[in-house]
Length: 138
Image 1 (cartoon, one colour):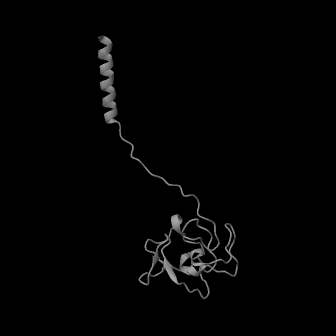
Image 2 (cartoon, rainbow, N blue to C red):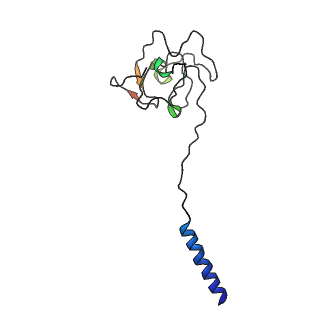
């Protein structure tokens, strides 16, 4: 009988301890890895291939010529929409040359000041297209 009382007291103590133990909140963490290292930016849809020179307008690059990102690696302003020339997108039939990951930009290709750039679409960096109501941030 003495052992039953000890067991009961231990069980009650265990329940009290469990009731006062703080609950850990669930956290979701997604590691998407490093953004593709592409000289003129990468497409905003999988498989995030390197985009050719002329796909992105100059507003997609900071003053130092660094791409502000696209897809899960986008790090531009919240309400940003910038010009792209979707003729250079494979979904629009582009079959020309693509740069490789790790390539360096050609010295004559200034990404933050593309000569004669004429974008035909506006995108937000997350794969959404916009209309004329959106303006790119320069």
